[in-house]
Image (cartoon, rainbow, N blue to C red; front, side):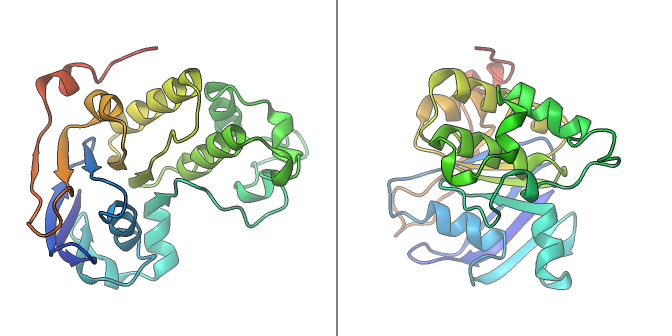
Length: 221
């Protein structure tokens, strides 16, 4: 379980909330309301006062790389620090037999991505290909918490549906998901609770999502 205790991210007041295992919390609000900064602060990518706990362990008790392996932030505009996407993924157990692990091969198939894209320069890939590969990169090593910042931004309807199905699969596997999105229909499909940042001068509250959002957890394209 992820627990956030009085985290302070400008321009917001101190925020406290929990996200249970297998639960999706949607963070809503207009551009500039602090959605991305909040997610980055939880991931320890941006300085912020307050405390964040994962299953009772406080973020400060771990080294930053260890925390970020468990609490994974996926940016709306993913960055790549490698020439090819393959170099950003863990190596397979037996590269001589197969250059792509079965887990990664399965993710690529689920996202309708050609494995050949792994060895192309990232700069040659389309925006949608980079976005889907970045999602695969975020989930490949099974982090405990996924902080997803507009994860389907710029994707067509078919690709968006594939990503949402994988988010649902992560939830069923017991991951905690914090989803920042402007897409109200996507939030209805995925979210259990919501955190509204539309008026940062007042303290937002996590509230139960609509019954529609709960009953559509199994939505298929």
